[in-house]
Length: 360
Ligand SMILES: *Cc1c(COP(=O)(O)O)cnc(C)c1O
Image (cartoon, rainbow, N blue to C red; front, top):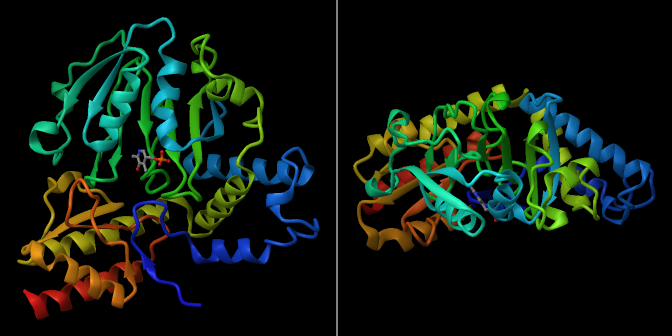
């Protein structure tokens, strides 16, 4: 067996110890005589797995009892519809900030269900910047304010939590949840597809303030209703049990690393190293305003585009995989989520140095 450094944006690398534990427990989960995949979701065994995972997430992120934690399905993209269907209520519009491809998608989907005001956008600058909050044209009567704290494709990350006043703040934290400390009490809803910092794709974790439950439109699909999901412990239907279990293993791993504050320091160091190297080089560059560079997704371009495929091929030979940038952006992108060890970043920098020396 030989593991690579996998810089994929998602599904992304998972901690090796999590995968090993899943392997060791695959056929017989702790004497139950069966795999977690084969267990009834109503069994005592699975209920214990589910409750432990939820509690560990609450401990890690600092989620109080004022919030329900939901383990839903359909990925983050299904939340683009689920959020407006749950939160628009008797309001007529919602506010959105547009900072890249994921916010654009969230906006397009929300427009199917209500009026959307794009109250700030960095589209004109090529999504290299976060618009200054003082200029946001927010509506105090909006149903909610939605933003994307980390734009996975552009590599653009907020370094502050927007102040939404009394309007509930909604965040798509798919690619930076649990990557650094965040004050959950500032939010109405946080949602995150699991496949970046948590576990397998398909699962989506939703943290929703309880006073926002029960406002859904009557025609909302039952499966999307936050209140129904909360009232049924995320088991209105059969949940994605194995993904939930794996998420739980990742939460335990993160606790063993010292929690979110400790991983946040490590993430800052990894990002600082990689951006520092890129900035010092004449050959590689990153277009994002430095203050808003993502700690999780680091896009970079080579001074000569015609060397892209040679760069990727050489990387593969060193078992540094999935560095190709998103098809809409081009260039390269290194995703360095929680589970990417610092040694992976070091190996990438060593390779980039060698490639520059040889080919530039
Ligand atoms: C990956 C990602 C999504 C899409 O997640 P799916 O689970 O594939 O629907 C949405 N938003 C952000 C910020 C992402 O990084």
